Amino acid sequence: MLEKTTRMNYLYDFYQALLTPKQRSYMSLYYLDDYSLGEIAEQYEVSRQAVYDNIKRTEAMLEEYEKKLALFQKFQKRKQLINQLKEYILQKYGKDQQLFALINQLEELE
Amino acid sequence: MLEKTTRMNYLYDFYQALLTPKQRSYMSLYYLDDYSLGEIAEQYEVSRQAVYDNIKRTEAMLEEYEKKLALFQKFQKRKQLINQLKEYILQKYGKDQQLFALINQLEELE
Image (cartoon, rainbow over all chains, first blue to last red; front, side):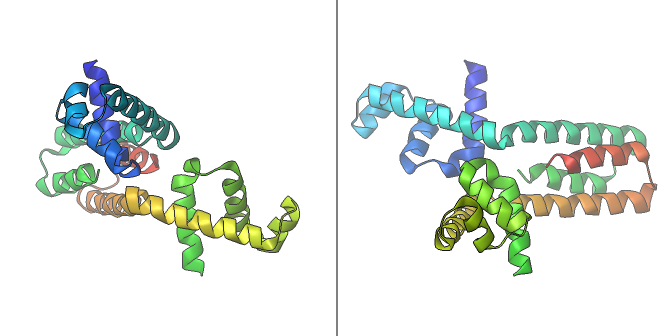
Protein backbone atom coordinates (compact mmCIF):
# COMPACT_ATOMS: atom_id res chain seq x y z
CA MET A 1 0.00 0.00 0.00
CA LEU A 2 2.82 2.39 0.87
CA GLU A 3 4.45 1.49 -2.45
CA LYS A 4 1.21 2.28 -4.29
CA THR A 5 0.93 5.61 -2.48
CA THR A 6 4.47 6.55 -3.47
CA ARG A 7 3.81 5.58 -7.09
CA MET A 8 0.54 7.54 -7.18
CA ASN A 9 2.28 10.58 -5.69
CA TYR A 10 4.83 10.45 -8.51
CA LEU A 11 2.29 9.83 -11.25
CA TYR A 12 0.16 12.66 -9.87
CA ASP A 13 3.19 14.90 -9.89
CA PHE A 14 3.97 14.15 -13.53
CA TYR A 15 0.44 14.18 -14.98
CA GLN A 16 -1.66 16.44 -12.76
CA ALA A 17 -1.80 19.10 -15.48
CA LEU A 18 -3.88 16.66 -17.56
CA LEU A 19 -6.54 16.17 -14.86
CA THR A 20 -9.69 18.22 -14.15
CA PRO A 21 -9.70 20.59 -11.13
CA LYS A 22 -12.01 18.19 -9.21
CA GLN A 23 -9.76 15.20 -9.94
CA ARG A 24 -6.78 17.24 -8.74
CA SER A 25 -8.55 18.25 -5.52
CA TYR A 26 -9.59 14.70 -4.59
CA MET A 27 -6.21 13.19 -5.47
CA SER A 28 -4.25 15.83 -3.64
CA LEU A 29 -6.37 15.54 -0.46
CA TYR A 30 -6.27 11.73 -0.56
CA TYR A 31 -2.66 11.11 -1.55
CA LEU A 32 -0.74 14.20 -0.47
CA ASP A 33 -2.71 15.33 2.60
CA ASP A 34 -3.76 11.84 3.69
CA TYR A 35 -7.49 12.63 4.07
CA SER A 36 -9.86 9.63 4.31
CA LEU A 37 -12.55 9.08 1.64
CA GLY A 38 -15.16 9.98 4.27
CA GLU A 39 -13.47 13.28 5.10
CA ILE A 40 -13.27 14.27 1.43
CA ALA A 41 -16.94 13.27 0.92
CA GLU A 42 -17.96 15.44 3.86
CA GLN A 43 -15.96 18.43 2.67
CA TYR A 44 -17.43 18.26 -0.87
CA GLU A 45 -20.93 17.21 0.27
CA VAL A 46 -20.97 14.13 -1.95
CA SER A 47 -21.20 10.41 -1.13
CA ARG A 48 -18.16 8.44 -0.05
CA GLN A 49 -18.81 6.18 -3.05
CA ALA A 50 -18.66 9.14 -5.45
CA VAL A 51 -15.26 10.16 -4.10
CA TYR A 52 -14.01 6.56 -4.27
CA ASP A 53 -15.17 6.14 -7.89
CA ASN A 54 -13.60 9.44 -8.92
CA ILE A 55 -10.26 8.55 -7.34
CA LYS A 56 -10.25 5.04 -8.86
CA ARG A 57 -10.95 6.48 -12.32
CA THR A 58 -8.20 9.07 -11.87
CA GLU A 59 -5.70 6.41 -10.78
CA ALA A 60 -6.53 4.42 -13.92
CA MET A 61 -6.06 7.55 -16.06
CA LEU A 62 -2.67 8.25 -14.48
CA GLU A 63 -1.54 4.67 -15.18
CA GLU A 64 -2.79 5.04 -18.75
CA TYR A 65 -0.77 8.24 -19.24
CA GLU A 66 2.29 6.54 -17.78
CA LYS A 67 1.84 3.61 -20.19
CA LYS A 68 1.78 6.09 -23.09
CA LEU A 69 4.39 8.67 -22.02
CA ALA A 70 6.52 6.80 -19.42
CA LEU A 71 7.57 10.04 -17.70
CA PHE A 72 7.98 8.38 -14.31
CA GLN A 73 9.98 5.49 -15.78
CA LYS A 74 12.29 7.88 -17.66
CA PHE A 75 12.66 10.00 -14.53
CA GLN A 76 13.83 6.94 -12.56
CA LYS A 77 16.34 5.95 -15.25
CA ARG A 78 17.63 9.51 -15.48
CA LYS A 79 18.02 9.70 -11.71
CA GLN A 80 19.96 6.42 -11.71
CA LEU A 81 22.30 7.62 -14.46
CA ILE A 82 22.88 10.95 -12.74
CA ASN A 83 23.81 9.13 -9.53
CA GLN A 84 26.26 6.93 -11.45
CA LEU A 85 27.70 10.06 -13.05
CA LYS A 86 28.17 11.77 -9.67
CA GLU A 87 29.81 8.73 -8.08
CA TYR A 88 32.16 8.31 -11.03
CA ILE A 89 33.24 11.97 -11.00
CA LEU A 90 33.61 12.02 -7.22
CA GLN A 91 35.87 8.95 -7.25
CA LYS A 92 37.96 9.97 -10.21
CA TYR A 93 38.14 13.77 -10.00
CA GLY A 94 36.92 14.67 -6.51
CA LYS A 95 34.32 17.27 -5.62
CA ASP A 96 34.49 19.67 -8.57
CA GLN A 97 31.96 22.29 -7.41
CA GLN A 98 31.33 23.78 -10.83
CA LEU A 99 30.75 20.38 -12.40
CA PHE A 100 28.39 19.32 -9.62
CA ALA A 101 26.45 22.58 -9.97
CA LEU A 102 25.81 21.73 -13.63
CA ILE A 103 24.73 18.18 -12.76
CA ASN A 104 22.42 19.47 -10.04
CA GLN A 105 20.74 21.81 -12.51
CA LEU A 106 20.18 18.83 -14.75
CA GLU A 107 18.74 16.87 -11.85
CA GLU A 108 16.39 19.65 -10.76
CA LEU A 109 15.00 20.09 -14.24
CA GLU A 110 12.18 17.70 -13.36
CA MET B 1 7.22 27.73 -42.00
CA LEU B 2 10.32 25.60 -41.66
CA GLU B 3 10.49 26.58 -37.99
CA LYS B 4 6.87 25.53 -37.48
CA THR B 5 7.53 22.21 -39.21
CA THR B 6 10.49 21.52 -36.93
CA ARG B 7 8.45 22.41 -33.84
CA MET B 8 5.53 20.20 -34.96
CA ASN B 9 7.92 17.33 -35.63
CA TYR B 10 9.19 17.58 -32.06
CA LEU B 11 5.77 17.98 -30.49
CA TYR B 12 4.52 15.04 -32.53
CA ASP B 13 7.49 13.02 -31.34
CA PHE B 14 6.76 13.77 -27.67
CA TYR B 15 2.97 13.46 -27.67
CA GLN B 16 2.03 11.10 -30.50
CA ALA B 17 1.05 8.39 -27.99
CA LEU B 18 -1.83 10.65 -26.88
CA LEU B 19 -3.28 10.98 -30.41
CA THR B 20 -5.78 8.75 -32.21
CA PRO B 21 -4.49 6.42 -34.98
CA LYS B 22 -6.06 8.65 -37.66
CA GLN B 23 -4.48 11.80 -36.20
CA ARG B 24 -1.14 10.01 -36.16
CA SER B 25 -1.48 8.91 -39.79
CA TYR B 26 -2.34 12.40 -41.09
CA MET B 27 0.34 14.12 -39.00
CA SER B 28 3.01 11.65 -39.94
CA LEU B 29 2.22 11.85 -43.67
CA TYR B 30 2.01 15.64 -43.60
CA TYR B 31 4.94 16.50 -41.33
CA LEU B 32 7.34 13.56 -41.58
CA ASP B 33 6.75 12.35 -45.14
CA ASP B 34 5.95 15.79 -46.60
CA TYR B 35 2.70 14.74 -48.35
CA SER B 36 0.38 17.55 -49.49
CA LEU B 37 -3.13 17.88 -48.04
CA GLY B 38 -4.48 16.82 -51.45
CA GLU B 39 -2.38 13.67 -51.53
CA ILE B 40 -3.51 12.65 -48.04
CA ALA B 41 -7.14 13.37 -48.96
CA GLU B 42 -6.82 11.19 -52.04
CA GLN B 43 -5.23 8.32 -50.14
CA TYR B 44 -7.93 8.33 -47.43
CA GLU B 45 -10.79 9.14 -49.82
CA VAL B 46 -11.90 12.18 -47.83
CA SER B 47 -12.07 15.91 -48.74
CA ARG B 48 -9.00 18.10 -48.60
CA GLN B 49 -10.89 20.28 -46.11
CA ALA B 50 -11.45 17.30 -43.77
CA VAL B 51 -7.72 16.54 -43.75
CA TYR B 52 -6.90 20.21 -43.18
CA ASP B 53 -9.36 20.49 -40.24
CA ASN B 54 -8.06 17.31 -38.64
CA ILE B 55 -4.44 18.45 -38.87
CA LYS B 56 -5.24 21.93 -37.51
CA ARG B 57 -7.10 20.39 -34.54
CA THR B 58 -4.22 18.01 -33.88
CA GLU B 59 -1.68 20.85 -33.98
CA ALA B 60 -3.78 22.74 -31.41
CA MET B 61 -3.93 19.60 -29.21
CA LEU B 62 -0.15 19.18 -29.39
CA GLU B 63 0.37 22.82 -28.36
CA GLU B 64 -2.11 22.32 -25.52
CA TYR B 65 -0.18 19.24 -24.28
CA GLU B 66 3.07 21.20 -24.49
CA LYS B 67 1.53 24.03 -22.46
CA LYS B 68 0.56 21.50 -19.78
CA LEU B 69 3.56 19.14 -19.73
CA ALA B 70 6.36 21.21 -21.35
CA LEU B 71 8.21 18.07 -22.51
CA PHE B 72 9.77 19.80 -25.52
CA GLN B 73 10.84 22.81 -23.44
CA LYS B 74 12.43 20.55 -20.80
CA PHE B 75 14.11 18.51 -23.52
CA GLN B 76 15.71 21.67 -24.95
CA LYS B 77 16.96 22.82 -21.52
CA ARG B 78 18.31 19.34 -20.76
CA LYS B 79 20.11 19.24 -24.10
CA GLN B 80 21.66 22.65 -23.42
CA LEU B 81 22.87 21.58 -19.95
CA ILE B 82 24.28 18.31 -21.27
CA ASN B 83 26.23 20.24 -23.91
CA GLN B 84 27.63 22.58 -21.24
CA LEU B 85 28.55 19.53 -19.16
CA LYS B 86 30.39 17.91 -22.08
CA GLU B 87 32.30 21.07 -22.96
CA TYR B 88 33.32 21.62 -19.35
CA ILE B 89 34.57 18.05 -18.91
CA LEU B 90 36.35 18.08 -22.26
CA GLN B 91 38.21 21.31 -21.44
CA LYS B 92 39.10 20.37 -17.88
CA TYR B 93 39.61 16.59 -17.95
CA GLY B 94 39.89 15.68 -21.64
CA LYS B 95 38.02 12.92 -23.42
CA ASP B 96 37.20 10.49 -20.59
CA GLN B 97 35.49 7.71 -22.58
CA GLN B 98 33.73 6.14 -19.62
CA LEU B 99 32.35 9.47 -18.45
CA PHE B 100 31.16 10.39 -21.93
CA ALA B 101 29.47 7.01 -22.30
CA LEU B 102 27.40 7.76 -19.18
CA ILE B 103 26.51 11.24 -20.45
CA ASN B 104 25.50 9.82 -23.82
CA GLN B 105 23.18 7.34 -22.13
CA LEU B 106 21.59 10.26 -20.32
CA GLU B 107 21.25 12.14 -23.58
CA GLU B 108 19.69 9.22 -25.43
CA LEU B 109 17.07 8.64 -22.75
CA GLU B 110 14.69 10.87 -24.66
